[in-house]
View 1 (cartoon, rainbow, N blue to C red):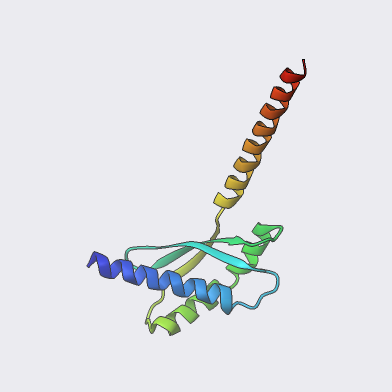
View 2: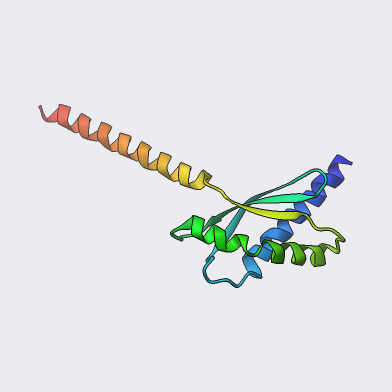
Length: 123
């Protein structure tokens, strides 16, 4: 039973990713990457974590994407031949932003350390 649930969740996630990336034609959204999809155990809701590739103002793009939640849900229901498709909720995945800022901070620390070593060797 658990294996079946896992397959169904994977199928829902894959189809949502395909719909978002290939069928939504709103230029205000731009290029979307679906990072993860969480589906409730009763399949009533799917939380879709997204990022916007090479785009500024991700939260404005998320608002545009949220307008298509019904479209994605209806396409998902048709693709999977479901009577009742899960409610879709798009959430901006900030993990890449946090990772980027962490990398920049580590790079700055490394540069500062390197400059301190150079300063000591000059004396």
